Each structure stands twice: as C-alpha cells, then as structure tokens.
Length: 181
Image 1 (cartoon, rainbow, N blue to C red):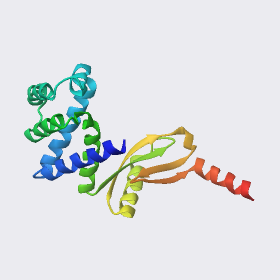
Image 2: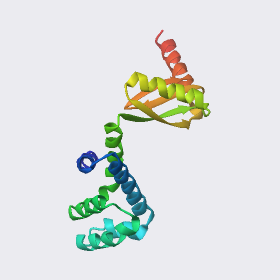
Image 3: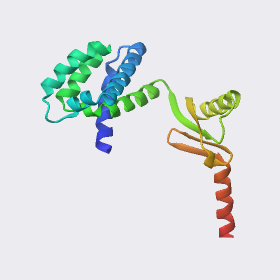
Image 4: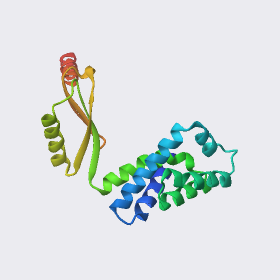
C-alpha cells in the first residue's frame, strides 16, 4: 500500500506541475473524479481497464473513444494514456486522492472532520472552523459528522491531529486517574 501511495504521489505532483493555472487544476480535479467514478461504477469498463490480459493498446484505444465522450481535457487524456502505457491505470483512485491533497496543500487548505453527538448549529460550526484556521495558520475545511458514542462535546480530526473534547474522552481520562490513585 505504501508503494502505491508513493507512486500515486509522484503522478499527482507531475499533474500539478503540468497545469498552467488554477482553473486548469480545477479542471484536472474534476476530470480525475469523473474518470475514477466512471471506472468504479461501470463493471465492464473496470474489468477491461484493470485486466492484465487486455493489451495496453486496446485499453488506450478504448479510452481514446471514451475520453471525449466523458469530456476529459486533453491533458487528462494524455495522462490516462501515460497511465495505461505504464500499466498504472489501476492507480487512478489513489492518484485522484493524492491530487486532491496536493491541490489543497497548494491552496493552503486543510481538510478534516468534526464529530459531535448532534449536528452543530451553523454559527457554532463556523466558530470552530475559524478557530482551527487561526490556530493552524491555514484555512480549515471540516466535514460535520455525528457520532453518538461521544456522549457529548466534539472531536476534530484534521491534518493528522485529533483534538478530543468529547465527554467520552474526559470520562475515560477520569477513570484512568482513579485507577492509578
């Protein structure tokens, strides 16, 4: 898995470097998501592209026909050809994920998740997001999720960190303190 991620990162960085401007980066991101979603949702296409039995030339021919129908930009179409010739088309999901991460990093964004027992009000959610952005020095974009196991409070996972202000963690901490006393 680490090798797949490492190779996906290299392809992603090459794509970021090949874009001329932010608009093209957004186009690439949309095309990659569209391509990955299309491959995942179409069993026959997935089997044809991922099968080691199907020749790379046949896969390339298939994508030359499908690419324009899917609205893929010329840059992404050439990139798909490169992936097929390098026998790496099966990396498209990992490349899409790392491209999104690279794009966020280039734009100074951090994505994360906020867990609470019930959905937070828009105002409270915006306050938490703003405070995290200020603390981390980057714009933080959170996805709000509910987790009834927290009992109360919130838990935030962003940029490889976990900020746990949940009642569950406080109770667990108190229990550990009582056990050691």
